[in-house]
Amino acid sequence: IAEEEATLRWLIARQPRSLELSYYLLFLLAANGRDEQAMEECLKILKRCPDDQIACMWREAIRLRWYRSARRRVSTRGVARNRRWHRLSHRTG
Image (tube, rainbow, N blue to C red; front, side, top):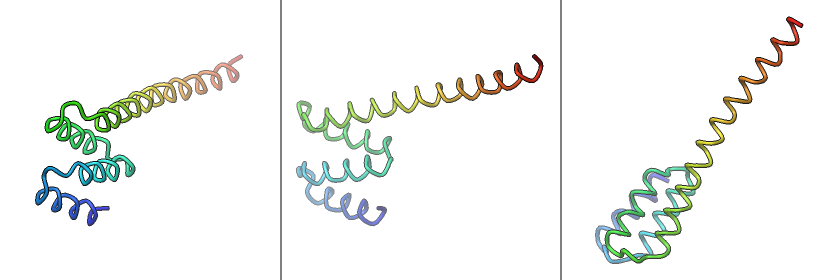
């Protein structure tokens, strides 16, 4: 991924108006779980083209993934805590 990313960034530097290259880089980063960098690429695209629907879609998808993973982390902590409590209550009762 690092080699592809470097190549894409080099091409984007040479052709800064190419949205296709920016989309490909955005997809590459998001598909490999590098959401912070993908969000930065979205913002760069939106800075150049404020009404770009594809970048808006990706930005929203990344936000939803962040929100969902944050909720999942909180809920798994609660489940783990409840399991511990459940085990302890059965031992004492």
